[in-house]
Each structure stands twice: as structure tokens, then as C-alpha cells.
Image: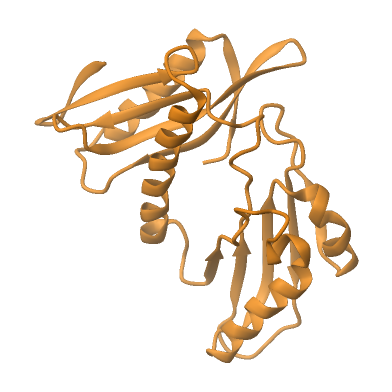
Length: 223
């Protein structure tokens, strides 16, 4: 573990890799960092005109979003509009493009394939503009990423902790090979609120230093 001073505070920065920890251990640590990310996302990630939704995809075979995306999205829109929030646009970034491409394109969505050598093979963005409606209108943003995809299952985790081993931030992702080169997919990089200035820079630089040490020259961002 590396000990670093940020402002007047001291933290530990620990690097976990597939060489030092089991895949299950890496999954658990990455899950804790992602949970912290979701807390921060609610705080600052989206402006008031965007409704952000993470559909339930824990069991893809039973997910209402994946089995009938058009009906699921229609239901979400109906609930929002009944509450006085007209939706004028729908955006769906997802790693389940192979399952969603046919039904959403048939429903009129624009389809964009996202090429990420280190990321999931079926990464797409779908977008649909709905007829204009009176009053302030909002965008419904539905994000569905298979974090258990073997291609992006974490092979490294950096944990930023205090002296009591409380998690204050971290980064996680996967390193893989493509077209003869080393690529990285950065799943999550986040910090707890209230840390001293430069904490984010120190964490990001430590992450990039590790990736460079593994021969990575290209990083695809999932965070």
C-alpha cells in the first residue's frame, strides 16, 4: 500500500490485481467503488432536464427492460408524464445492443454502434425524439451495462482509504489485448464528497501510471 498526503489528510492507496487477489475479491471491491459512484451520480451527474434510470438487469433472462424494451420504456414515460414530467427524448447507452437493436430500431430509434476495443462487444447508443409537447420537457436516459461481462470484469482495483480502512474513493477496470496491443477499460473512477483538492488528480494519475506499467496506450471509458 502506498501512503499519500492530500492536503492535511493522509490516505492509503492500495492496488489490487488479478495476480494478488481472486476474481471474486476484485468483483467485491469494484462493487463497493461502483456503489460510491452511484451516490455521487445522484449528486452531480445529471442536470434537471434529464431523468436517469438504471433498469434492473441483474437477471438478464427475466429483465423487463431486456425482454420487452419498448413496453418497458413506454411504461416509464407514462409514469413520468402522469407526474407532470413530459418526455421529449429517450437515450439508451447499453452493452446489450445485440438484444436491443432489433426491437428499438423497429420502434424508430436511431442506432449508433460504439467501438471500444477494450470494452464490451455489443456497446450501442439508441436515441428517439418524441413529438413536441407543451411546457418544459425532459430526456429519459436509461443506462444498461453488463458489469459481469468477462471482457470488462475487473482485473485491477485501486482503493483510496483512510487509517481505519474506510473507502474514500477508487478506480477499477480491465486490461486486455486487441489487435496486438494492450487496451484498458476503465469501469469506474470516483471519490467521496469533501476530499481535499487534488485528490481526484492523484487517483487518476495513479490509475494511469498502473496502466502504463502494463503497456496500455489506449483507455476506453465506462466511467
